[in-house]
Length: 363
Ligand SMILES: C[S@@+](CC[C@H](N)C(=O)[O-])C[C@H]1O[C@@H](n2cnc3c(N)ncnc32)[C@H](O)[C@@H]1O
Image (cartoon, rainbow, N blue to C red; front, side, top):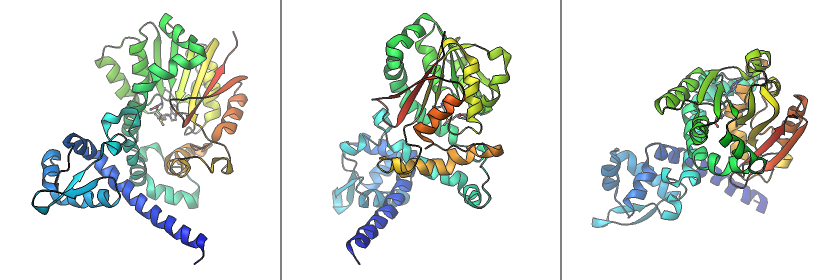
């Protein structure tokens, strides 16, 4: 075996181990085991962890085997020679719900969730080229809302908005403008903004009826009178007279690349924007070609999410199937094709994985 073969065989062992570790960590995250271990705050035996979590000791012992050999938890001798397990604080800082925006544990659920939802239809797609319906991903909106909770809650109002247009967007939101969240999902971001800027009016648009109903219920229950939700296909907005020149700011977070007709959706945004309005599209910061992404720190992960979800849902009904890694060059070209002439691409210090495309419409 030459050095290159030796290195690759080790890499293969890493791949198999890390893939397995991700699956077990996802189960642990789901059962709040990292939170339990952090709360225990000291080496604990299987029976103590079972007591604290209410989970089955035999399953827990096997799971702890994965976590120990994967160097996620540390082992020390416990009472009566039993093994005791500690989640070091340096690891807990990236694995628990308390970690907030540093919580990477939440992402361990993503690949297992997509595999359990769509392995067979994606597998068939390799032969047929067909897309995979949204209905195949029943738990996806819940998961996206969990991610949105982790991300938006900390960053949207405190970091993103104050930086847009050198602070002018924030001033306008405080004075009172009309805002649309396109592809709002369960409305986590929309409801947050509506609460933060009571003088502005917010309309959330999404094609998913159930997600829209969840957002609407949350707005109702929390007494938000400036938040409204509508079920609309973004590709059909251009033909809707009641939405002509309706908004001063449209924002679409992670909501364009998996649409089947993104060009029409962009044209719809142009249609909805009043003169002097702005469109903020926040989407993955990547290159459009593969070679440009070789040094992307999460390249394989993001392409896999795209392969298992974003691309196949975007291929439905003869759709474009852009995929999550469509990249900045392709995104800019599509925005220009839809009629946006002034486009600024801004990196965001608080969110290095996404890029902010700020498009302005002249007065
Ligand atoms: C990845 S989720 C992002 C949701 C939300 N913006 C967030 O940050 O959590 C993409 C959203 O776009 C919505 N969507 C997909 N195609 C759409 C279309 N044609 N018109 C409107 N919404 C659409 C999906 O239902 C989903 O809620």
